[in-house]
Structure formats: C-alpha cells, structure tokens
Amino acid sequence: MAPLTLIGSNAEAQNSAAIKQTPLTKDEYRREIVKSTMFICLARENGVEFDKASKASITASVYTIQLFNGSQFAFGNIKDKLKPERIAKIVQTDIFLRAHALCPKMLPDDINKQAVTIKEKIKEKIKSQKK
View 1: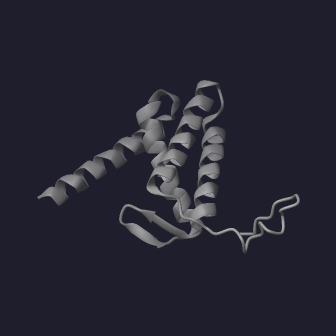
View 2: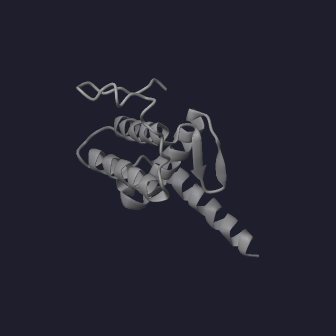
C-alpha cells in the first residue's frame, strides 16, 4: 500500500513514518460492517442495482479494514496474515449475512440462499462443538 500523505502545513509531520497502524478493535470492525450493510440496504431501497451497491459497500469496508490492519486480520479462529482477496471474501460474507437478516427482500435470491446455507452450517458447527 502506498504511504499516506496529507496536503497542507503539517504534511511532512504526518507522513507514513509518523502514522502508526493501529488495528481495528472488534467494535470498530463491527461498526464498519454495519455501515456497509446499511449502505447496501438503503441503496437497494432507492433503486441502485445490487452489484453496484455491494461492490461500493464491500470495497469501502475492505479498504478501511486493510488500511488499519494491513494484512494482519483477526476474525474468529483466523488470526493470520491473509491475502487481500481472502480478507475481501470474509468481509463480503459478513456483510451479506447481515444484509440477509436486515433486508432480505432487497437481495437477489442466490445471495439469500447462500446466506441461509451459511447460517445452517454455522448452527451445525456450534451444535457439534457443544457435544
């Protein structure tokens, strides 16, 4: 990722060496995902095509998460260096699952079916871990 620089009188003081990368907390991650989920639902409600709404929403979230976390990503049992594509897939799944719960009528049928399948797998995994 290219270093960030600001334009203005403090630009040199705020170069990439001066900016410390602070990983997002779980709450900050959740807020980012909620914002993206709301964006998809509101955009769809206002007639924006699903592909356009989801790409804009997911791209913004992935960028924010990578900006703060770099390739270090902690999600559930995953606490590894991940490729940007893998981070994007995790974020996309999280957003779509939440959108399915919030505004299922605004999502295409295939996304709703995938969300139901994923939720069932999660329930089965939780059930098997309790045994």
